[in-house]
Length: 354
Image 1: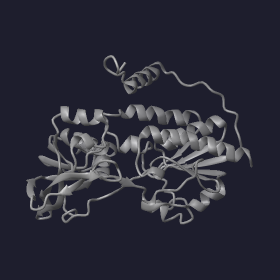
Image 2: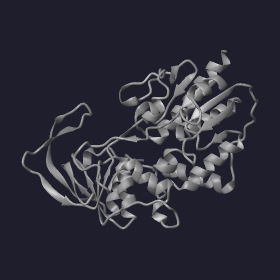
Image 3: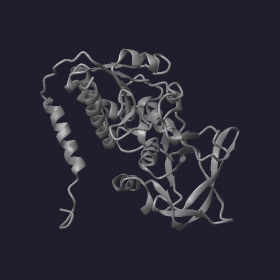
Image 4: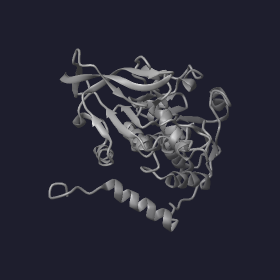
């Protein structure tokens, strides 16, 4: 269709079918032949959800351990309501309970229960802990009030309902002018969330729009809603008074030769620094797996930045598998869902051979 007109939006078709199925109460019909073996899943995000469903279809007893007070992972805390209605997520979670998945909330593996205890009690483990630890630029002023990581900003907004204060107890300071550092999908979510809090929002990006890592649709929506996109700028320091953000010093950039990402390398233009007045700064420059979990399990194989290492079957060590952002450092929901299914098949093959 794209060759003769406009391409078909497959995502919107899938969304329509999903909504229609929920409205009609349509569920996949399958019978479960119960097995005695048990599998523990750490994390209830997209990869944990898909892994749990497939493992139940195979007949295994499945327990999901979730650190937060609400299941869903990034689907719940990272993606705003205007992009993914929470009723869709809740429907999926209710489906898990219907087919017999045990979801244990407020359970931090490494604190409430040890990894060794799980290995003793369960026949296999799947790690879907995501990548909830943010990266920061590493510049002066990041300790000021009014500076957020995108993770914190979105968690306070989506999971903790800060926009409904004082009905909810969560505070979130969103000033009149907000600067979002970065131009990926998470930056767009942060910018559009800030806009809905009544702010004037600026995306601050060191390259040009055409090199933004955000999906074309997400970038277009942000621009259509009135978010300002400042190209070829990079922050050098965050300015403040009395402990609060007052602005950011930016340096102008130019594009050089391609770097390892294949995009032109941004290079500073010496002496081009200027000040931009801001009340709030949100840093959306990427994430990595949370070290709080990893340091309690030293036997796990990891790569740089705490990314969990796996083989082609998503296996880490004997009986332990991983997928989703925990092995990529941050990718798409659909990739995480696929890896959860792939891991379920690998776990099934492993347990069937025992």
